Image (cartoon, rainbow, N blue to C red):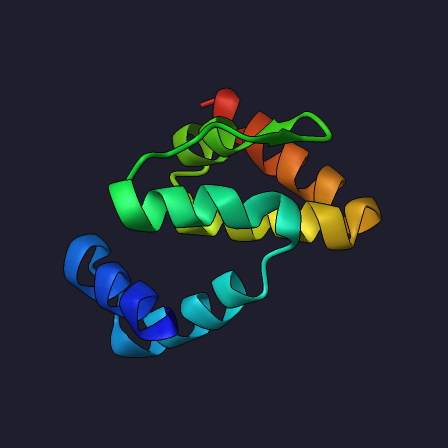
Length: 99
């Protein structure tokens, strides 16, 4: 599965080999709450909108200009370390809204 992820990241999203490797590793370690969304994206490129603690994949993609895989990794950070992740990600989204 990791190789499939890397191939998609490189071929479809323009990731470098190095960044694709790091990103694929992070995606392989997603919490169970996010794995279904990853599978759906890998199989169908469907970007399910997921919201955790008031931060959604949609917000991250639109306001931070993240790719869907990066948004999933960010939400995984929210699940793993909400005290650090939530203020940082909400601040990034707010800053972007002011431009």
